[in-house]
Image (cartoon, rainbow, N blue to C red; front, top):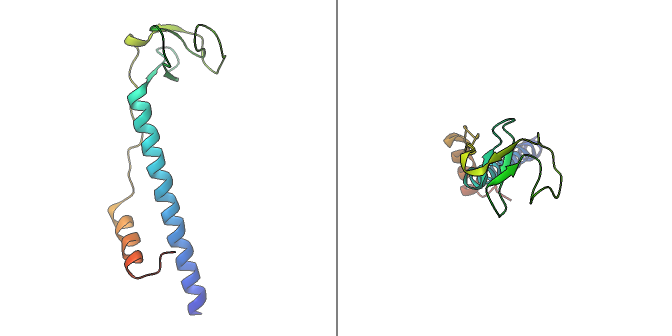
Length: 109
């Protein structure tokens, strides 16, 4: 009865904590991409400039080495659109409040 309900509740709490943690990682990744990446003007693939000149080819790095997925379109880094963060929904305040209440009750692992 009570033990099973508490175990189920603790499982839900852990799932909530895991989801919030994954969301925070996603937000950090998106912030990094917004700061350091651009979009290929042809296929909109996310492109990172490691170093060197501004001449880029989608799907290649350092003048053709290390082939990666991409359309092969040549473009200028400075003219490419900046990557825009696509995370639009953050965990609700209610979920954070529930997690905080659980910690204060001493049930957090």
